Amino acid sequence: MRQARALQVFLAFAITAFLVACGQSNSSLPVGSSGGPPKSTPPPEDRSIALACKTDNASYLVADYKEQGKKPPGEPERVLSYPVGYETTAIAYDTTGDLYVALNNGSESRVDEYFPGDRNVDRTIRDGIYHPDALVTDPHGNLYVANSDFGHRNVTWYKPGSTSPLSATDTGTGFLSALAWGDEDNKLWVADYSNNVLRAYRIDDEKNTSTKVWTICALGCDLRDSDIHGPSAFSEVRGNLYVLNVPLLGHDYVREYGIHKDRDPYYAREIDPKGDYHFVKAITTDPYENVYLAEWTANCEVCQNYYAIFAYDLGGGYLWGQEDGLTKPISIVASADHVYVAEDRHGGDIVVLARSRQLPHEGVLAKPKDCARPLKLAVYPPFY
Image (cartoon, rainbow, N blue to C red; front, side, top):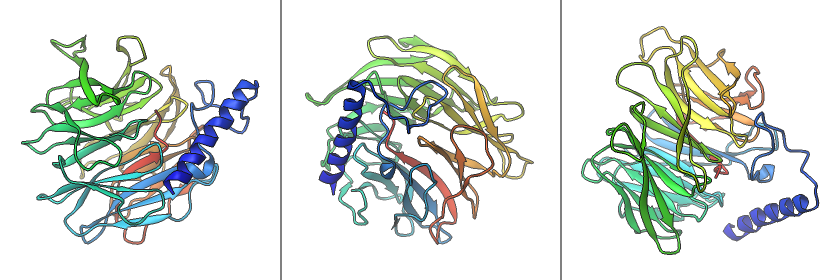
């Protein structure tokens, strides 16, 4: 199955390269506001969405779906269940469509890998896993895991097929809240929430080495930025790194940095919550370089609260907002055609919105039978 998937992806790239060489374009691809098609959009049958849910008996499950062209997915392709006590802390895809699920039950932590379509675990990683809170993969098939256990706050690096870490890429005392792979600069980015620092590492896949090459923080860093406060989430596309800041006081906001090849990182702009919305719970980007924010007006369970998704283009221009019919959006991902929003409430939906314009709900995903509370989403392909 892996070989078939790899051949399919190779053929897709080969056909695209041939068309470009002949001066043709794929007119079936929708045009984004930033001008131009995605860098690599697999055939429609190769787009997937993964969902992590909590059940009523406090266990967790993960389901994934296939997009059908421009139509939202139907029923889940598969549902993966875990014993009571194992929390699903992170999910991610790699470039071949393998799905990674990070699990923790207090005494044991691990990451399970599933090949496309498989319901049985194809690789389990326990060595070097200590309460994993973030996952990211790179185009070479490497897996990076951010551990948040008090005695093991680091990022461990795993080569394809390996169950032992190659190295601890990032070590320190801070809570490592997010990971991202730099599309253009080919670097691993790490968010240190406790110390208000962003760190970048150059990964040499042939020499199996990692080198810290850049830092962003208020004092003593390569790029000084006094407005890094509680970096909590990343989203990256085509050399644009979006960082969600959740300070202890004041409203949340997003900072954008350029992380382009052969150029030092630089601050580009800030995106503040819109109007009366003061809290940003999630961010994501799409292949067209648009950015989406899931926003709340209040940050408490008993307060009167309103919720929205707002979309912005690459230049910071406001595209659209969706306020009706949303409750407690907690996770958000985007494919080439759709935006998926998970609602953090009992009986919450996974709302499907149109990517290119403001619309009422296109619908909701068909949740697995035991999914009581949607929590996390992931999208394939990752946008390197």
